[in-house]
Image (cartoon, rainbow, N blue to C red; front, side):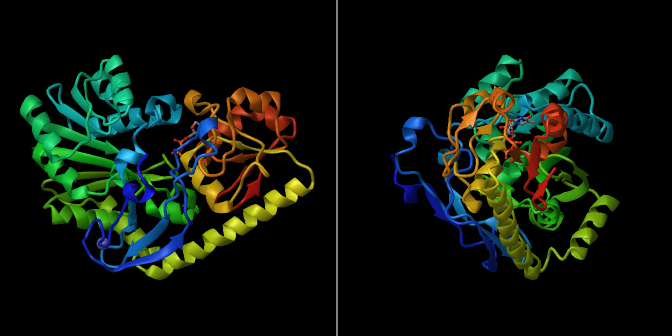
Length: 414
Ligand code: TYD
Ligand code: ZN
């Protein structure tokens, strides 16, 4: 196995503007990779912990990580399946309608999805008769898409890959990148690829979790090594302007704790929506380091409050478990140092996570069945992004006096 220091690099300049004016505002401590669930036989081996510190660039206002774990280490067994989640399927259907209505696509249009996962998003476009190609680096997942009939190039998207795709299939009218942009260190390499592949009046559409939601809802646990950038619209406009492209439109969408869908073209005018978001960001003082220092302090206070609550319940003899073995849960459990002294187990519906242990804190993960057979008094909702769906689904547990603990925006029993 390679040494830990061989798996990480450290940036000294901002990923968007190249400035060195970077200021740390939050340190979540040495943290293992959030999706690095362990088998039982791995529990006694040394585990790799990497710094998890968030920085603010006072030149372009990008919030980012500077300690970069190599993607080859992080994504070697990528396990997130888009198609597995109903809210994501609904979301992608809505995204498809939005794009088709607003960009007047025809049957001849060609759509490329970067980080196409199991092909769930492209299936929607394909239903409308458009031609599609997915680009997906994880070979097991690319194969799932192929099995559904979604043609997929098994590769990381970069300029070289874009040149190949363009040569073989021609320029793309739409390029999609949902939930990949925040994961990429070398944004300009991707964007050179987009620039090469996008047709003259084509549109590049990205979706990223929105920084303003992260700050307002205390979604600090969405900070983990896979997420390198935490975007607001201002630094995105800065980035695309540098490449001679225009952010023509934006809207807020309700996935992953609140995201933005951003439309970029070679030419065009910024819409009213863009101006509105920019002024919201100014009002929220996203351009001021003080805003982030205050957030860092609030995260610390949240941890104290959550731990007081959990220890009090434990002291009363309550049985507590975790609901959803999420990546964000890994951040939360590690930062708060919650282990099996507090949570008996975690349940999760994802088959491959079942039987494994959470990174760092080593809490066992069981199928959902255990939650019903051996129910706790309290369940810490680590999959808070699906709170509505889960509370509804577990109404019987709640009727029998079972409670959920929501960790954010502030710890609350419901
Ligand atoms: P996800 O939303 O991908 O969060 P993250 O990006 O932080 O990992 O993960 C949701 C997890 O929650 C996934 O492992 C499945 C699990 N889950 C349940 O166990 N039960 C449920 O009812 C739902 C909706 C999700
Ligand atoms: Zn910057």
